Image (tube, rainbow, N blue to C red; front, side, top):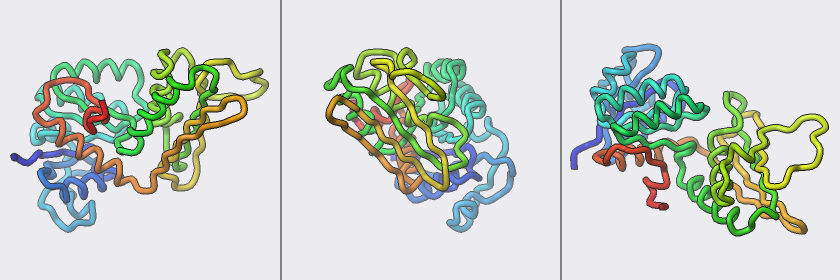
Length: 265
């Protein structure tokens, strides 16, 4: 089996450094390069592995040309640009970026007509299993149970609710057969009145160095069911992203999720 050459966008950040180490330690994968604001830095040194003899670059097109797959956990504008470049060359793209809006989503969907793209709000196995459970429970319990999603992340996270929380909300809405956008309540403040039946609420907490906690609450009369996932190490996301890149190499163009990668559907 040929090695999958994997490039990393934002390789100087915390997740980027973890991705370097994960790729370097995964059979069948090889570090192809990385983008950072400062070019010329050794990728192995960045990840604490010792020199790899591969320097960081600043040219996204050059990284795509040198890679079989690109992993991007950066910001929406950069991710959209990577999607366009990947589509032009047929390079696999794995997207872990959150906060992507509707217009940017359309660009990614268009790019997926030309190359395999794996896009998930969360790359961990546990979270994707949780999403499947949430959809099943929402469908089984029906509208008599109120759904609230509570998430907490570190103080530096820039988007809210988290992409994972929204993904859990979409799973719950799918279980009920409705679009999430028709039923979500992203914030409450002041005199809000009684809770509207059928809505899916979100509560966001930020503080400290929390990697990511998510709880989906199904609250009925006389009982409450809570499904929770707590991430203790960001390496779970790096492992999932590398697994997705290896899985997508050689696949036909299309927009895939971690459920596809993990064989959960």
